[in-house]
Length: 215
Image (cartoon, rainbow, N blue to C red; front, top):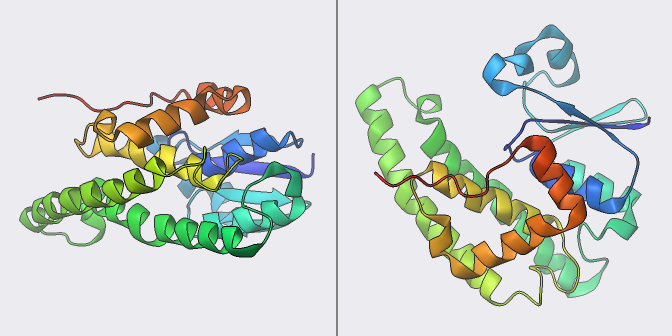
């Protein structure tokens, strides 16, 4: 099989995972268990020395970084609708994808792994608290986009934007933010998760969409 996707359940690798399944293309999904440190194994580091997911292997070529993987798959599998094909719709979708990846995603990293930014435990707590509030605001921006979805974030066809929105909203529960409070986004991601192909990925990754727990 020429396409292999190395993913971690619940990670941002859900985005190419969902889009590959939606495309109908043959691929081999390979789970990397981050909690067991499999991303630090010699075999995995030979693929990606940064020890991150996702990794796409296409005919022996190794591709890392989610935006690069999505753009590669978009060119290879145009029927998948990973992004709009052309024009301003594509430009706007690329802008939103880049923002999700370079702003919203790293903000959650400050919530989930503040130890990456300082060894001081008190400072870690301050970083996390500040990032939670910033993340809440960013989810609000996604909510505004979801309220205008027609019917999906990039238009008539489900795309990588919807898959990323699902991931980011789901992470909100980990940050102590109730995802159901973002009513348009919550409805959007539930519709996306209910698509038969996406439902297979949700089952394969054993995902629970709402991770919010009341105190």
